[in-house]
Each structure stands twice: as C-alpha cells, then as structure tokens.
Length: 314
Image (cartoon, rainbow, N blue to C red; front, top):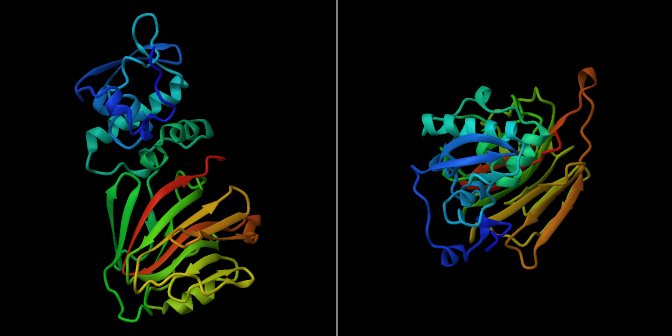
C-alpha cells in the first residue's frame, strides 16, 4: 500500500505518482478521532491551496489516506478542534472575499493552534494584521501568507517613512509572532525588527522624521536600519557596514523569536548569511504589566511580508 509523504504540501513528485485530483463538489466522508457522520465538501477543505490540509484532501491521495472499516477517511485529530476549523472554513467560504471579523475567529487555544500549525493554517485563521496610519500606506494580499505593504507618499530622501506594527491587541493577542520575512523592494529604505513597548503605545506621528522615530525606540528594541546598514539593539549599535545596498538591489530580511527572550535578524541575501542575535527584556510598566515585543517595519516604498509564523505557547 502506497504511503502518503509526511509533508504532502511540499512534495514536488506527488503529481507524477498520482496525477488525479478530486472535484471541489465532492462530498468527503470523515471519521475525526472516532466521531463519524461528518461530511464536508472538498472545496471547503482545500481553500488554502498551499497548506497541508488542502494537499491532504486534494483527491490526489484519497486512495492512500487512512480509512475506517466503513471507508470514511480517518483524521487523527481532536474532533472538537477539527470541527472548529471546519466551521471557520465554512464561514470563510460563505463570506469570501469579505474578511472574517476578529470576534468571529476561533479562540486560539494551545491545542487548536498546534493543530493549525500541523496543517500550515495558523496565518490563514489568524492573518497578518499591520497597524499604523492607514492614510500613509496600503496593504494588499498577494497570496496565502504573503502581504504587500506600500507607502502612499514616498519622500524623495526617505526621511519620512511609514511605520507599522503587527497588532497583538484583540482576541488573539497572546499569539505572539515567532518569525516573519520582509523583502524591501529595490530603492526602498527603512527598518525592520522587534519593537518593545507597552500595549497602550500609539505609533508615532508619521510626519516625524524616521531618524527621530528610530532614536526613540532603540533603547529597548532590536532592528536593522536598511539605509544606514546598521543593526541597533538595547546596547546601541550591534553591527554596522552590513553587506546591503538598497539603492542597487532588493533586501531580504528574516526576523525570528525563540519564544523566550532571544531575537534574531538575518540578512538572507548576504553571502554568507549574516545573522545577529539580541536579547530583549521588556520593562515592567503600570500595574505590574510587562511591555510586549511587536514585529516592526518602517519603509519608504514597497515591502513584501511572508513566511509569517506564530508562537503557540499560549
């Protein structure tokens, strides 16, 4: 019996092994963790084409998926969590292309988010949400888990920049970010990294000069300044004379967080890969509440944000 690869979504040879795919109107009969009588249209399960869930139920692997004695496809997941995901996918399918309000998204429990991570659906259920002065930038979804942020007014010398933070305020505020990648278009200056502040912080007036903004945040934050080719941390300049030139080429940067106090910034296109690590210790603010660390991007031009991953230690 042919076994399905562990990562169906990333298998490039699967189409040659079994080229047939199912129809979106197929009714898929499921046994989820022992609960039977569950019927779902295939198109409901395959909305996010690049996810492992979509690859699993594409129809390409139906013959090799585990089944119970009645022929139902067996899903080895907690029934409550999986049906919660199905309910969300049904709601999205009914409302598409309109977005699902935050209040209507599932509660991000550890168990539910662990299942989403397994299927590659964390950014599908809890999408990227960048906040800032909406009059200064636009946000467009290019593909699953990939957003394009563009300045509406670009200053000639990039002294003015649009600054956005990834929103942690709301129903899934505890789902912190563990990784994201930013591609600065050729000619786009700015900064990217981790911004430490309390939840009541408001993004500074976007009429302020970018250099003034950076001076304010670098006391307890960690970021790469593209134009200055410097990485700043809590102790000042950590690295300088980085091998980047935003005027001549695009700059790709990966930012990661280990779930504790360690953060890293990697310049992906550098040869060899240039990685800098720093520890951030959020201050205690009023009522014994600690500051939070937010992903931050400042840009004068266009950036593409992808490979977004959340922490699931909620």
